[in-house]
Amino acid sequence: MKITTRQTDIDRALALGTPKHRRPKKPNLAFRTLIRALSVPDMLATKFTYTKHNMDAAGKGPYLILMNHSCFLDLEIASRILWPMPYCIVCTSDGFVGKEWLMRQIGCIPTKKFVTDLTLVSDIVHTLKKEKASVLMYPEASYSFDGRATPLPRHLGRLIKRLKVPVLTIITEGAFLHNPLYNCLQKRKTRVSAKLTCLLTARDVDALSAEEIDEKLDGAFSFDNFARQLETKTKITEPFRADGLNRILYKCSACGAEGQMTGKGTELFCGACKKTWHMDEYGRLAAKEGKTEFSHVPDWYAWERQQVKEEITGGTYALDTPVDLCIMADYKAIHRVGQAHLTHGPSGFHLTGFEGKLDYRQSVTSSYGLYADYYWYELGDVICIGNGDRLYYCFPHKPDVVAKTRLAAEELYKLAKEK
Image 1 (cartoon, rainbow, N blue to C red):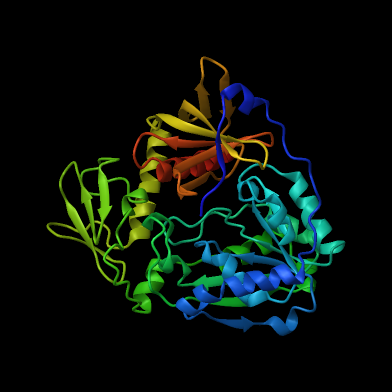
Image 2 (image 1 turned 90 degrees about the horizontal axis):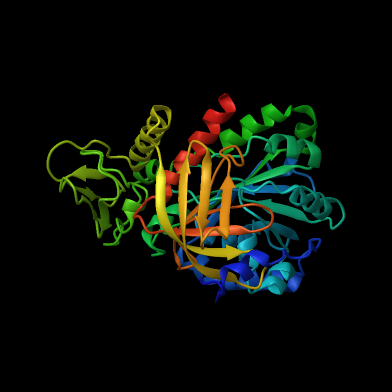
């Protein structure tokens, strides 16, 4: 999928106004049916199936529906399971660029990822109470990097208490294996399934505390796609299954070098110490020579997180890189403005450039996570920061820093909150 882009000078881009707020509408049945029809080829290709659990207790709705986020297939899965139920979808605001009318017709509610958005809460309440339509959300906000759940916002329980509606979950299996974000948008032949569950009835929402609701959500969003692949003996036979693996495994577990890893074909290779790992058909890694430090991809990723945390506490963590910069303020286009400079450290992000015309700072406590993506709209690996006025899409010149920056943003936030 691509996005509308436009070459714009920095002065004009910084002067752009934000779109006028519009209330979400219940999506038209014809559009809901069209989306379902368009999803049929992918559903057939993945031999999609789903099961229902505790749905007799759910009542008639409307519902708050929470779904894990693995790949673009998630939208089609939701359409397959929920049709003909009317529901609106909370989606990232850049999804509206160049196609606002269509997105509103299918019931999308725009929001800026990892940016405080009080209007979103009002829009969700409006959809549930006034439009009498359910709301589908991806509470992880970003696609999973390593096949496990990304951190959930801690105030979700409070939101659910306020909404006072049943909560359903859709948890997929196989969607991540079908098209993991790191794998350069290459689809693999896998079966995909999902489980639709009534996690909380309206009575549960009323009886439980916000903290207890958060605990139930953490339990529902607890999964490991790589572990499940091995457990079910799901084979990924494609010869490109390790392509782009360096995006998440950016630090060599043998010599510690960063930005020297290459994932290609079925192998992961370190350009510094020349060590090579093979990824088998079950997603396991094995060193061709010597010790296999981590055979399980999420364990390697967790080790990288710990390494980042130690850099932060030791005062050595720092990101410093030139970036190609795009700016979004309205829904007309993503504006390419040229090269800027991005740093990240204990005081947060600092984006500068254009002879002093751009000087944006973002504190570590502004968000619990970071909007980071691979091959974003086929433009490149991106780090996105910003506020309610505009978003800054930064495409780093340094290789494979996106995952580390996301880990650092999460760890800096937690450390700041502890203090």
